[in-house]
Image (cartoon, rainbow over all chains, first blue to last red; front, side, top):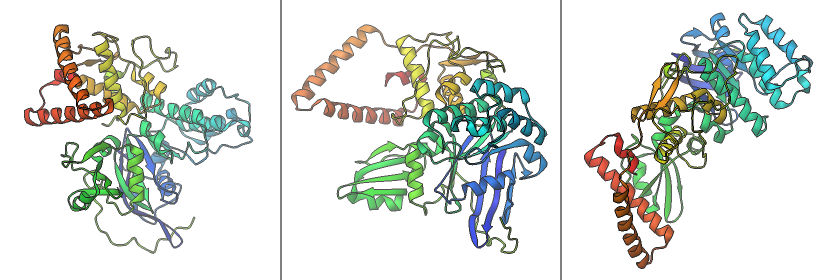
Length: 310
Length: 171
């Protein structure tokens, strides 16, 4: 099952296309990291998946084919927007009461038990909570809806390292206990390495890379060798990024398989997720590895007629 | 590696929903740690730590590996990563899942007898003396050994194919 599936998805705000020709399939059971520079279209993609905004062109379905924004989709998806918004003048208890009454499904026992574990005073106004507690409160409210898919828009940005780890531990535990699928956008690349097992990389409103993290790491290498030979590889190998000095060159290449032979005289080093992501972000033209992601058939331009305003 | 509904049957030994299980679990003699600077993929670190613990005798057949949920909570890592590591250990014949209980050690890592080890060590010391005499310092020796070791196993695996799981521990 795919928790998110898009076909030629596009979104335009007035004259600007913030998302274009996006063909993506996010499989269930993963924590998928959505990464890319600011303005890459990450938040727009998330809002489209949740149904907070509608596509200008193309289509998006969630949870195995449900139209985004349909009642079945709304019941199965929980979304925590950027900076974990809660009503500052309401207490945790009030927030639970409110969320319980605004949703068709809500696990009240889970929510109250979780607040106890977190040590959040039930009567304290949300605005007086620490950033970490506020994020945990928003996450608890989202998880108490027992979603199949949890979407988190930059949940870690405002948190200190300890709060980040506690937050992610709650998310990971929900995955282990209930099999929740997670889509999470973040700039904290180093931290994603431990938690993300699926990567969706966007830049400039377009999908650049999508695939399982282990597979992506297994088929990328940094090759280090004599700069004089580097050009020869440009034709033979799929070079994502080249860094070279007078004598030595480092090529981040995509191999055709994990057991590809290393050219004689060259050394191959494994890449980290952070290195891989940065290399692709610095080479916006680098192709989506075709066997790992989806075909991007050349299609007619998105229809210009159905403009939707913010 | 997709889990559609929670954790596979073998790892269904999760604590009760009220979360009353003791931290770390009573069952396992080992606890995992992660070295994020090593560059080794997380699931492989878990596999290697189990193998290491087997070689050093921290783990014996019949011992339980840490429960998936406990590893996830204590290391803040993806449950799929832990499942992948445990599947790899099962694939190597070192561990097996018991439905409803968890994953348990099945085998030990074969080690060669002590006299053979001593003889090998003596040969190696002889080689090290000649490397030293030739002017290589410690780092130079390590670099040479590492690269020769890699070539050796690349060539062996390339020509002979995989020779079964029990030879993996030699490297």
